[in-house]
Image 1 (cartoon, rainbow, N blue to C red):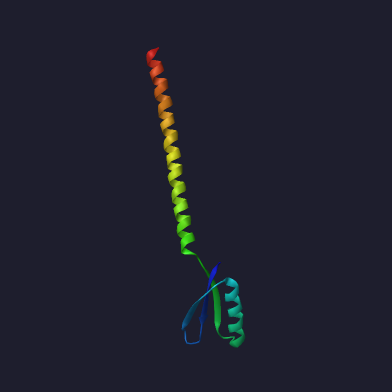
Image 2: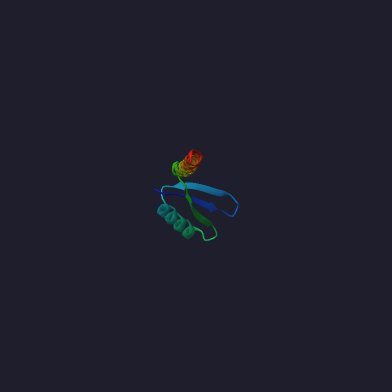
Length: 92
């Protein structure tokens, strides 16, 4: 479930931050606050899940390692085939 953050700015410059269970509940609370006082500004900001963010980082890292291994394997194959050609030339 997506978390949302309700930020309310009052005239005194005091910021209030409240975590909400979903974006829908944040938007409902925002409307309710705006109906009570039109001078107060509210903003709903989605909050990213830390576990998902770390998971995507490690997936990116894993993909990079796999690509490097593939590149290294291709380079090894090329060196082996070049070495094979060289030894055949020496025998002739």
